[in-house]
Image 1 (cartoon, rainbow, N blue to C red):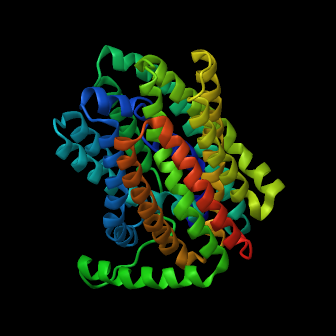
Image 2: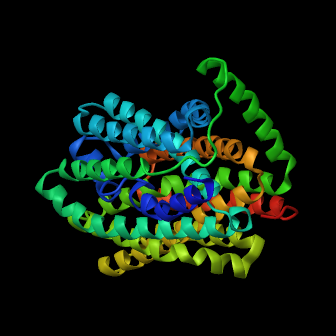
Amino acid sequence: MNIIMKKKHNARIYPIYKMFSWDLLFYYAISFVFLVQVKNLSPAMVMFTDALYPLFKIINQIPATAMIDKIGKAKSLIFANIILAIYLIIMIFANNIGLVILSYFIMAIAFSIKNVAEGNLLYDSVTSRNGKGMYSKLEEIGARNYYYLDGITSMLTGFTFVINGYLPMFISLVFVIISVIISTRFKEIYETKEESGSFKQKILDYKEELTTASKFIFQSKRLQAIMVFVFFFNGIIYISYTLRESLLTEINISPEFFAIIISTLTIISGICASLQEKIHGIFKNRALTFMAIIYVSTFLLVGLVTGLNINWFVMIAITLILFAIQYAIQSPYNVLRAKYLKSFATVSMRTKIDSTYNVIESISQSLMAFISSYFLTVFTVRENFILTGAAFGIILFIVLIWMRARTI
């Protein structure tokens, strides 16, 4: 198969792969309840494990990047999805927080590889305008289909959880196995070259290359602006999931309705994935700024609304609308952010820039989750929404002023 046929083949199956493989299916709609009710963790402990996960991603980032260049993106995806299956198996049998933390370390290995290999394999496989046009289109289709599938399957998650708390985990494992099968169909576009040197030496070499990539990033005003923006904004997105689910649990939403709510929000996110082109078309280089302002504002509103002395159903309805706005922003943000990062990079630098971005994002997520974990032991969930919205509102205001001279 020649290189053009390989590219067409990969581009054709990538949206299907992403639909099944972008993240865990049949899991997140009930994962918080699973950890709290089945594994007996407190919301603060769940947030603490959330804080450790990004640190594990940082630890695994350099070995993951070295592996991708050693064995290729296609084979790396097969390996990563197999590792993800192992994560679920460990989580199923975990009977203490130590094993839960171990399972998170295993998951970090999988996503450290997937986060770099998946997007770059697609970028290698599209040709129009150096891949920029078709890349975002296929990413959008894959993301939209994932959100639809995740939303539809998650409708059933709560009911299967009521039957048996472990049943959603086993169904999620089946979807990961499907991901493994699909990943075997990808073709490597740029074959890896055999090089001398041990794997340890390659890791050491990549430390130097990532340092070079970091220097490249901070010499570019656009990339510099994106990385600073990501450091703060991705952190709030990361902790938002546990905060939302903690609030739903605090107001006594049953597992069935809990899963339905999360799945509905996920479907909304999928529908809104196609808005990335319209948002970019309207706001141009201020698109990320617009989304950040709306997103942070909803945190303050959730905290204020849930503290009002109003009808319970009215309070729930308004809160869910605000949650829906958050989900509607997350999907186009992820597509635009990935597009912008790759638009400013050469073929030789894309993987290194993605790796550097992942490290910055992981530091942000870990730091914000550790802080939020502590606050959950001191303040109520409602108060955490207010504190988070106020703090990030001030921080992002300062960051956006600093970014004014830089173009995103």
